[in-house]
Length: 123
Image 1 (cartoon, rainbow, N blue to C red):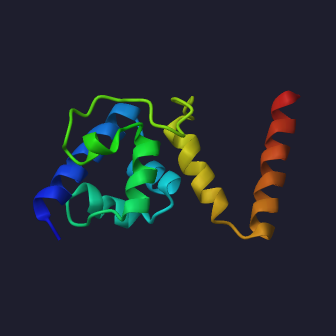
Image 2 (cartoon, rainbow, N blue to C red):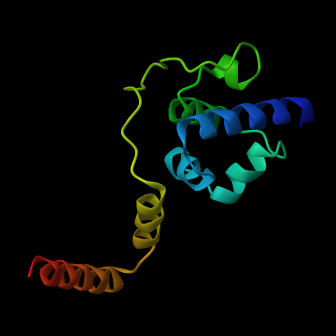
């Protein structure tokens, strides 16, 4: 592995993630990789595959040249990218990740609790 390239990719990815106000877990989820893998990527310990690099570019709104350190890292429109989307607050993103991990029965129970709380609030 080319350590210099891995550090360049990691540094650029971290800066782009911070610019977008995303957490490592947010980026990992959108790219479709484990959060631990993305964390190692940001630290320059691992290089992404070509497929992952492409998805990173789309998620981070970056050109591959910028992510690879071949050009400046200014945000650019990437083909296939529909533009910046309105982001949910971090607490809501964390809650959604937790809910996605629940078994269907547990998720139904959470829905019932939330519906009950909302009904009480309306009174």
